[in-house]
Length: 292
Image 1 (tube, rainbow, N blue to C red):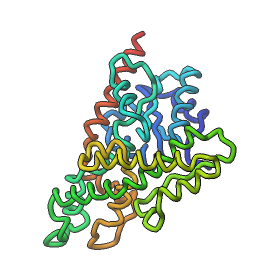
Image 2: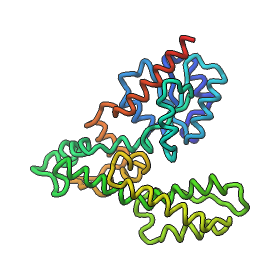
Image 3: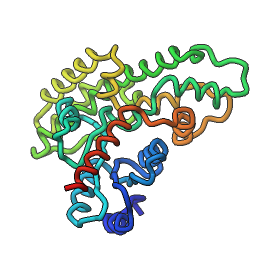
Image 4: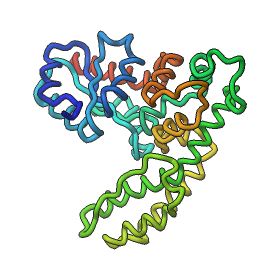
């Protein structure tokens, strides 16, 4: 069991649906859950359905539309490595695609507003204590921690970018084997990332290209390191959220990461403005589609 609905199951479900359907990335207990929580007020107009990765999202949207479901079907995917130009293009009223990318790197990037986590500290993690821990007792202090985790994630982010770039450029070469993305900001603490990437790329004749790609991307990220809005576009919020979960103080038992995120949603129940604007954009396009 994959935990995801098959296309046949989705098609059957949408045959009796109403409004529009949005196929999203991630597991139903995570991304789909977050969307449903934030957009519960649109439950009569929008349904969310998770698929495993952006390619599956695109495939599901294409196939369900081909089958002619009675509700318009759209896709909503993480930004990942998508350049600014493509994000800007989908905001154009003339854009008629059916799959949209998030303006930030991933959905978890919208679970990292410092005001929300400050309230979690006050209302949940230290609700019975007289004061908050030093270094976590103001919104600015929480913001500083989050920004620091973003900056600490830059080497891992540059590593993952290089893996992505090498797959694009060298994926058809003899000897190429994909390198997994790293999922913790601590993954490179005992490894020199440039050397590790060069060693990997030597097998398919791209050692120097891998070194250059890593250095260029790290410089690109470091030039933006003081601007949290830029880091949110280019650095995985998953990395930062995982580190926040590891580092934030707890007065009692530490919840698992999903419960941790749910506590944030309790304090920040309204949808983030960028996501709200994107959903409204899809609703508008769906209404236009219906009227044609």
